[in-house]
Amino acid sequence: MFDTLSDRLAATFKNLRGKGRLSEADIDATAREIRIALLEADVALPAVRSFIKQVKERALGAEVSQALNPAQQVIKIVNEELIGILGGETRRLRFAKTAPTVIMLAGLQGAGKTTLAGKLGRWLKAQGHSPLLVACDLQRPNAVNQLSVVAERAGVGVYAPQPGNGVGDPVQVAKDSIEFARTKQYDIVIVDTAGRLGIDAEMMQQAADIRDAVSPDEILFVLDAMIGQDAVNTAEAFRDGVGFDGVVLSKLDGDARGGAALSVAHVTGKQIMFASNGEKLDDFDAFHPDRMASRILGMGDMLSLIEKAEQTFSQDEAEKMAAKLAKGPKEFTLDDFLSQMEQVRKMGSISKLLGMLPGMGQIKDQINNLDERDVDRTAAIIKSMTPAERQDPTIINGSRRARIAKGSGVDVSAVKNLVERFFDARKMMSRMAQGGGMPGMPGLPGMGGGAGRKKKQQKQAKGKRQSGNPMKRKAEEQAAAARREQGGALGLPAGQDAKNFELPDEFKKFMG
Image (cartoon, rainbow, N blue to C red; front, side, top):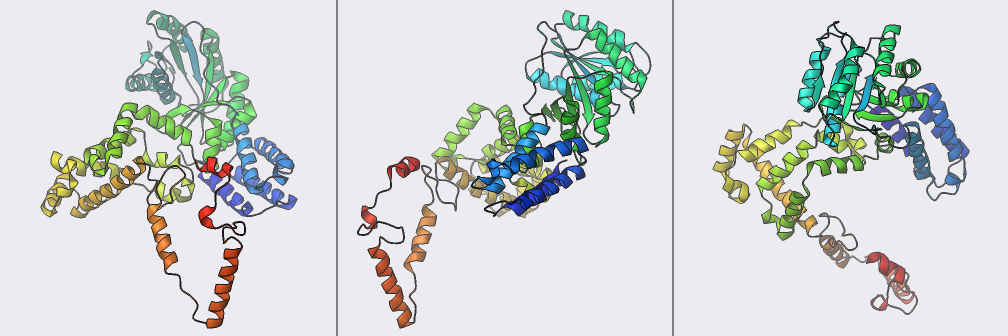
């Protein structure tokens, strides 16, 4: 959703890099580009004005003029102001002192309230709660059936005493659901209310009546993130007509410009609490302003990625795998490879996971074109092998490759490529597990590695050629002798050679 905005901001910041000092004209030009980028992203004008004013005031101050890297300082300011406009700190749900906690969902028809009720119920269940979904949308055709199906898929309870389709009193259903929840030991009640295609008095009155009947601990306004500028008008109408405590953004996986997300918290003064970014029930999570700002600026979202990994991967399994790799590359088999791949797949869409990594905005076209079915094809190839072949892929010859290809429905070349890639990956993973660093990269302090590169550099240095011109060669020799007398190219004190040279104590501590 924020691709267009991210691209414009990235291009703006690119023009700043490399400048040792930023003039007032540079900052004005940058602010103008950011303003255009925000307006093109459909951000509300009051929010844009406030944002640009803050950025300019801070950028013209001492924190940029006295910074060692002014361009990075401007990016830092924009990042902090983005966090501010998105609501600042993460807002958590307020729970009632005595159960059940009542959460009421309000919003226009088509915003995704019913599906979101199931997503919120599933999310709360994962947090250790026992939620109950209440069907108070008795106007929309089949809304009650939809909520019942969503509740079943989410594995949570549902209270739907009325058939809906225009039959029943939603206020009475909401009132009765509280006693039902107490009787059946549900600690959270999620009330799904009716919406309309537009703001009208009847919808507002019904929502207000339900609010008065159940006295909710949280009223969440469900906002379609794809409706742009109109999101602000809708949010203000609900705030004045019914009142709400927090905002839930739905359809964040859409391709609209995303201005609603950057406008609603600033205009209404109510924070975004949750975000839905897909059609599946688990495509839902708490909204973190700092992480969203980081994504918009192309810095990735490593914290969310780590949280997903912690939820999916077992600590014991991870330790076993690390121990296997440390013993040697041959300990890691295709069975292990398949297991790891299936664990990653449980974390969600591969393209979404890659999008959380820093710098991936530069190759987003390749990520968007990624075929998720490649993972399934790889799994099919491995599952078409015998246990012996998975344990020791070196035994896979031509006839075995043909049999595996036929069993998995792929070309023989696909089987060959998979095995080759597996061997390369196994070597790299084993080397990293043993502290060798990434192949082809210099070893980090305390991490080992870099030996191959060092040998290569020594070999190149050994074969250094001298000039064929006698006058030039003599001048080079004299210059080399002068450098040796002055302590060499490393800047050693005169009379001290490289063998006797020692690093200062501060460097020794840093290098470990």
